[in-house]
Amino acid sequence: MTYRKILEEIFTEVQPYFGKGKVADYIPALERIDPKKFGIAIATVEGECFHFGDAQEAFSIQSISKVFTLSLVFRKHGDALWKRVGIEPSGTSFNSLVQLEYEKGIPRNPFINAGALVITDILISDEKDPKAYVLNFLKTISRNDYIHYDQVVVDSEKAHGYRNASLVNFMKSHQNIVNNVDDVLDVYFHHCSIAMSCIDLAKAMLYFSNHGILPSSGERLLTVSQAKRLNAVMMTCGFYDEAGEFAFRVGLPGKSGVGGGIVAVIPGKLSVAVWSPELNPKGNSIVGMKALELFTTKTGMSIF
Ligand code: GLN
Image (cartoon, rainbow, N blue to C red; front, side):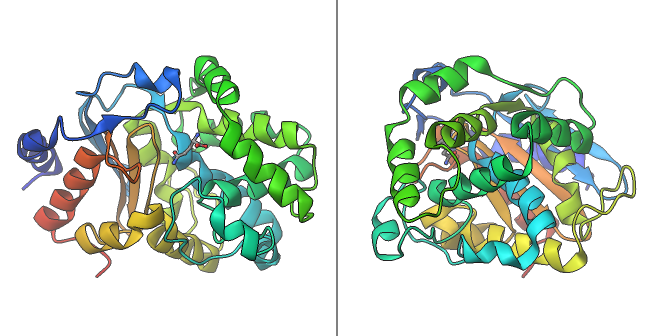
């Protein structure tokens, strides 16, 4: 069966899963999204791309951005990075504060908000213009110059960012934030507010599928070992307190965002991105998870 046919079948089979969740409502800018949107795209390491539905429409990538910022920082700092952020699944929600208290301001992993805020802090120390740096990186790896920050989402995040502000301040009190807390929040909210499509995201994730090499240019962005490690962190921590469920049902390293996007990687073969805005109570896309479960079941491809 062709990938195109598989994507069509998936769209038919996910229909009963619409209407069961809730679009992210923690900020007004995301509340307005049409819950019926559905897009899916596959990019192969050989350079092919297949897509279906609203796969060309840009949406708020939210926490999917954490994969890219982490890889930029990891590439530069290597394993020294893990002194400031852990690699263990948290078993708590993405914006949880509770573990930080007894772990002395060292977040459990780079994909919960606390961990991503530390990664942002490192980016600010390293780069003169961290916002431009991340955006340019995404434009290069997805080969799309139109990728941009959605200013409406940035403003909404800032107006409602009390929890993230408390996380940064708490970590600052433990000296695990070096820069000004407002600067860290500003850059973090910008990364969460990047708008990309499923096609952009599937292409952007290909270096994780291709052992660290960007297939379009042959450029090595991560060593083989670094790509393996970041895929492992996606596998164990990419879905917060639902990482076990995602591994059980889908069987791939991946990362979700509260915009309703999910990316996943089949090492050596392809990457896949799906978008459907209705979320379950853990902040992961209901239809997106089902679509990826169907994808690995139908193709027989997973890492297990
Ligand atoms: N902007 C969101 C936040 O910081 C990102 C969370 C997510 O996508 N899981 O709360």
